Image (cartoon, rainbow, N blue to C red; front, side, top):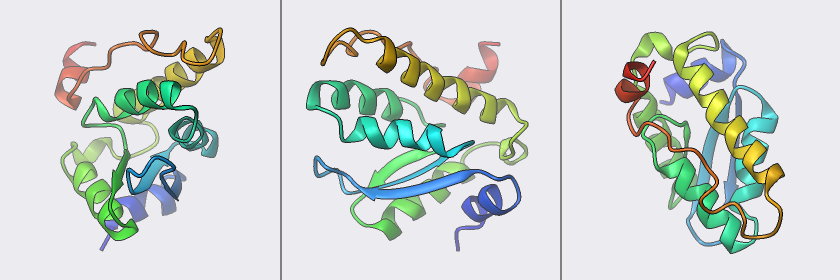
Length: 140
């Protein structure tokens, strides 16, 4: 049922987490190369609303980050599987350009959050990400 999610976890050692959104967005389903990558998104999704808004807008601004929400866990998992199906299938592995871009995007999010001087200071400090995977590859 969730073949791509399963393959990333089972064969490529990706981390997966699901959690209920503190602000009522439903249930998150998220993949990352390491647990701490997903922890960053989970922590920011439940941070104070000023930081949460900037962080979730950043994550949701692109079609290629493997993190999203649904009304239920099943809906979130199905949407994540659909998102993964929309990517070039040869990219769904740890050593790909896609995996490196996911890592950079979440590290930039974490680094910006850690560098923020005060609550609410994350807004406007996050880099702009290419909206689509093809744009990401073309930008290189």
